[in-house]
Length: 123
Image (tube, rainbow, N blue to C red):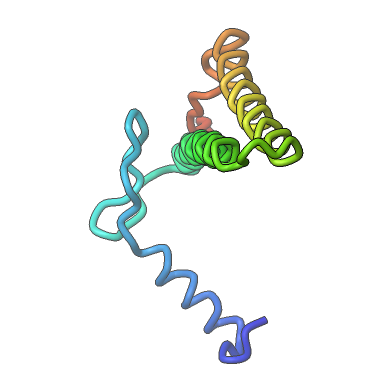
């Protein structure tokens, strides 16, 4: 591990400090922190991470499409570079289709799957 962390207490203290930040509020998402304090429940945190992962995956796929397009335009007629660029674009489009397809399938099968709630545990 890191050499400057000598004990587990120091590691947990570092993790606790890192958790005391204001997390960005995603569009359509839940607000999980206020003034550096975590105010969300575990299901809300899981939903936030899922929404964040979907947004980042879409952004990365879009970036790869742009990269493939630039690579294709700058290939200067080289067939191997053009094939590599089209493969990058095809892979990014397949990734977007899988991402959107999985979210749409989950919403069609059971819309409540993506809306997590805290269970009521009454004893």
